Length: 260
Length: 222
Image 1 (tube, rainbow over the protein chains, first blue to last red):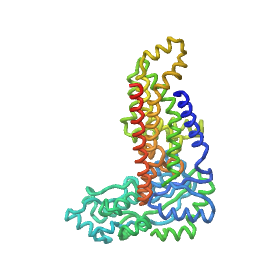
Image 2: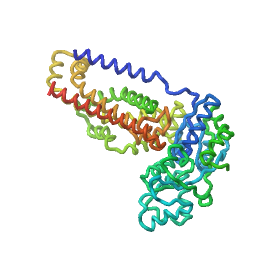
Image 3: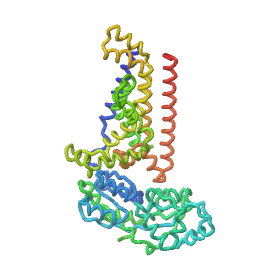
Image 4: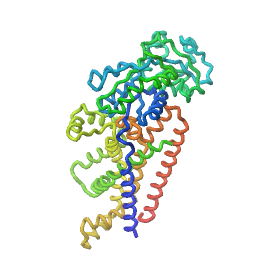
């Protein structure tokens, strides 16, 4: 008895294993591209439109631009890189990881965002936040990690220009990328935050949060740059062109991106 | 529910089992029955992943296998393959961090078999390989199964090392645990909660099953 049940179980395991290996997850024709987390909602729409127009699929891996850069340096199989600033694509170009000249396809913007339930006054110079700081009633303020996320770098620059950086530092909670920072502040886990306009306009956030756009002169331009990487195939090249087209441009402007 | 991530996670867990089963049996049995020079050192090394932060293991794998380093460069030039940001890399990582989960229950199961039984079998003229298949393995089977169940569940849930070594590539390295993280960042609380609840239930089932198994074997042989 014991032996029979043992053999049966082993056979079952083997069958399961064979079944699990026989199905391949994706066709080779579907390129993987790397994109800054802040582009998530706009890019999802563009990928959908691209699929409707060309019949081709794209897989996207989202993270902060700095983290993606490090992954590309270490040999990640991405074919196209959409960075939220131009610095990282320049760095990759210097290291001969890129296949063509980088293009700045749009400019991103910062917003001050908070949950709809809070009573925090939103203004373009962060006076409301500054008052909270003076009253000692600011708890947590979220930005993306300035060490590797472009919107975090821009947020840091804006806070420094507004002379708030030193005061607000003890209250900062750092998101791994702009999307996480937005999640922190829109959910109310942090009272407010500086995140990308493109995320604030996402359908999922529109109903739960309030925001105000920060003037672009408070930080260096947040240049949305893209570049093809060394192993780029035809579909990735096609998508690179598609992103510069009219349809993609319309979607980008709906998500708050402006022309460079 | 992200079915693609779930399928990938199950595939990864099963593939890891395929390697961990023989590794666990061989090392578990060896450590249970043999005394040899450096045994405690080997045991320390095999238990290390239990306490080592997964990000430490992830960091060393990234450093070792990135195409710019020695071993990674050799792999890519000789076999045109890589062990970071793809399924094979995740598989290797899963095997390494599951070593203690696979080996320890098996080692204990083999050690629990009374010496007299094995001696009696040998006295009756059974060949060592026959003793292994007919006596040892059936007796150690509950330990083997609980080791497999634990490794399976552990692979399903691992996060840090998967994110570091695998990146977050849908259909390639985006496992269910990563997908939950991803969904939360995409403000998709609904999917995140469904997936979290499924994993919670699965974990409860796993633990209940291993407890039931050890209880049953205690009643039987204890």
